[in-house]
Length: 115
Image (cartoon, rainbow, N blue to C red; front, side, top):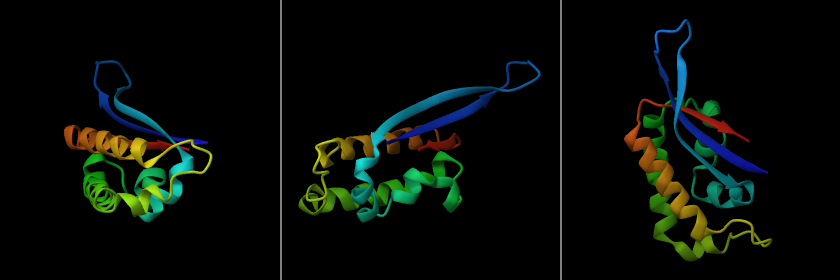
């Protein structure tokens, strides 16, 4: 199992319906769920709709806080690396950095998570 996240925005092409433009997408393994819980960002990543997050701008604070926590104590989070080797702290930190950068670049984008 994995998580796919998407940032998108509608584009008015003049057609009867708006065209949805994907601005960012990323995938990460669900094996990192313990790490995301420990960093306090599980819901923001896996279940944003359940905590009222609909736009990328609303994710900036939680992702920044989680990233700061991840960086502040690497050993704590490395200890949560999945034993099967699928996913790691070394993979997850850059993934969060990339998602945060996209949210900062497109704060009005719609957030979607597919699990």
